[in-house]
Amino acid sequence: MKYTILKIFEEDYGCEGIPEDEELMYSVLVRDTNGNEKWLRVPDSRLTGLNTGDSLEVKDERDI
Image 1 (cartoon, helix red, strand yellow):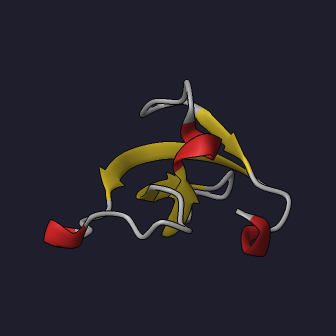
Image 2: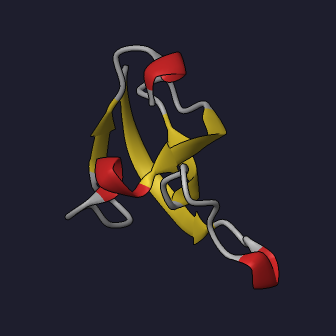
Image 3: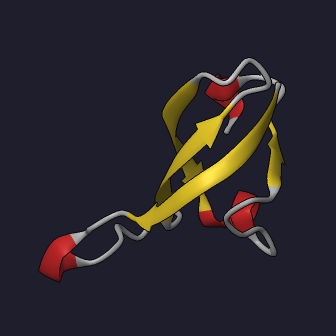
């Protein structure tokens, strides 16, 4: 599915920071081609070079 990125928020890991075995995650508000909006948790590596207004291609949300 192709989404348009509406907002990107870095998740808050508190004073403990990101756990060693995890990647920095973002909460991303997206809109699909039908105009439906929803939040996705997306790793930093998937957002490299992307900004608000850009497209995010997701084949399976479980693989984000």
